[in-house]
Image (cartoon, rainbow, N blue to C red; front, side):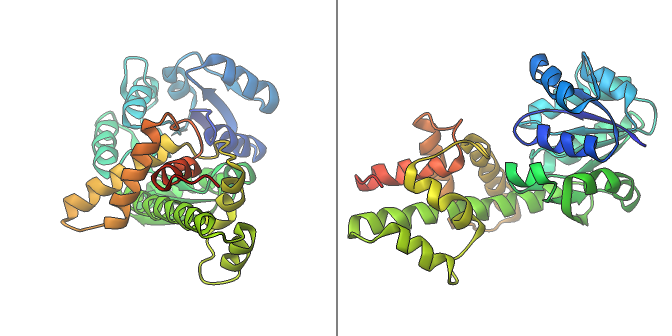
Length: 294
């Protein structure tokens, strides 16, 4: 089996790496918090690397699933980065969300060192990461995406080659901005319903049975009613993705007002100290605007 290095064992990455282990890949893992990597390896097997560079030395494919551009750059191109220790022709697959311009820039630096690069962000929160049913949008050459596909198929149900390097990021931030707007819209409907005296359980049931149904309704509706914001996808990460989408919209000379409004609401939620909570916590901003609590 192909030797795979995996960097980043957070909410999503730990589950994705577990699916690679179950598929039989020879895994080397790294996490900035060593204890988390040790715990993961105790459960799933594999080798725990001391540095990202060691991951590069041991892997034919190196996957990163971290928070942002700065972390991707550090893990791949820093002094102890994976690209510094990798053998020529190693394939790097970044599954983080860092924006198209940064994916192309980092990809060019990786290529200059004699390696290949694919940007392959995902959609689907922790439950889909756990059961291997993520949707993965891959940007890169046909050859590089084909080489990455067996590993991607261990982590996702739908693998879409969306175009050249960077297009995976474009599709991802647009998709997440829609999710963010949907979640914020659901929060607004529930708060208005509460103020109007509507039975909110009945409202959720009716919306689920009609054209108002959505993945956001299914995932976030009932947790909002109980203010259960256990993080499946952190609010601060959704805010980052919406901001990246708005940058892409501005660069394209296009308007995305729904994303702009969502960005304002998530920014306010982050300002209230909710960044570590699930992004459904945007509800608390809508509640504050309306002086109403569900």
